[in-house]
Image 1 (cartoon, rainbow, N blue to C red):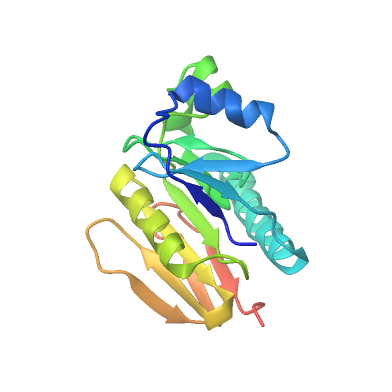
Image 2 (cartoon, rainbow, N blue to C red):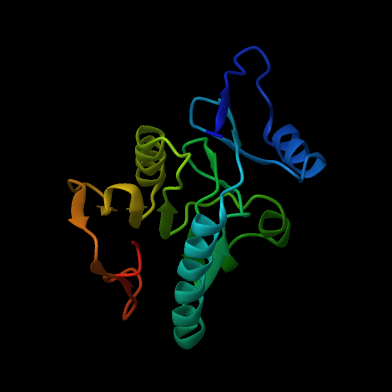
Length: 190
């Protein structure tokens, strides 16, 4: 099932109301885009779930070795500075930026744009909706983002004020200066 997008123009959920909606319906995954539309995300299948877990594992292993920041799963909602409430499949934030948040901000939906995000397209994801989500991330201040698209055997690399770079799979990605020393070999996507 594709994600369901609801236009809530007449409702205008506050941040607190959105937080409670998510908490009171923990069996569902919600996001809000910058236009305030509520997006109800469907669960992913086994292949996508395995790939997502592998990505988070690789990022977490690198982070444990460097201790430069914090890694987050797709269950984390970030309150982006541009107004969106988004949950990347994997995210990373530099240590000093995350620790600058108050304990209350870290406990709820952190009001911060990650430094790095990964989105993995599942069989039910609309490519255009994912690309719009990637643009939201970049507009919010994300420094590096990867959209992995196994269906088309491509990965799109997003950087601030630069054209999107598209590579064919398999490929090896670099964390560049954002994630120094991190690389991800994408040869496992058949």
